[in-house]
Length: 324
Image (cartoon, rainbow, N blue to C red; front, side):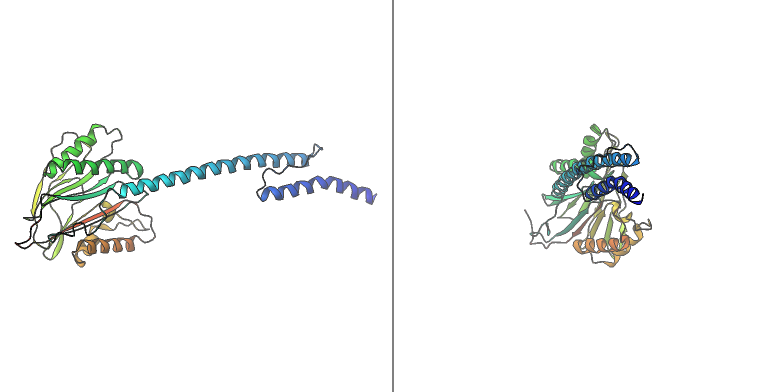
């Protein structure tokens, strides 16, 4: 009787052994391993059918994962290309005007994602420096498209007019004409006459820049118009200021003063002003110091918004210096 029981147990456990061996192969990634053919209609057969369903599910999951991974890799590659294209649209060669002694300028953009909506640009025409900084509502690819359009419009429009409010007006008309998404862009557009030091500027809903003159940095006062892309045919207003030799204008987007640490505390204008007052006014030094301090403040927190800075220092040229 003992041997009969032992034989019965062996026969009953054999399918389990076969199923266990197959399960080990499946666990090692061999999802197509054939399962043992179990004739009985008991719980072991049900367990075998459950393993078969698991095999099919795992196979389908792996195939879907391969497809998703390939799509993600393609998307990351396309975003990398988009990032490179976007970065090619902002000035990045410094010194920007090595032949000039009357001007020092430096800018930097740090997108929160692969691509972003911040922008800055500048160029010289007829001894006049035209410059812009802007912040598109939202982030990512949609904002980057508006950024690209705005940058191109600035370059084209500033070729025909030197009035910042007219440049902003034309940008606004283009953005409001087909704005189904309701996106807008805050802008600060200026023109610095390098022969006189006079700046004409138009602030379209943007952070007031800092004027580093005399002994203390202070926010530049003036008319704050609405952002571009909100209301068509809006009449934007210019403001004026006279630069003295050694004065620096520091422009930035709200990714600076609204940068948050892990406790969701904002960097704030008080800290921005403190760094500006304690740093040399050379544009590159100022921006590098500001970047270092805000990164120390943010710490391990994820960057919450695009961050762009632009600094312009005006230098008096001697009477025998001139530029074509």
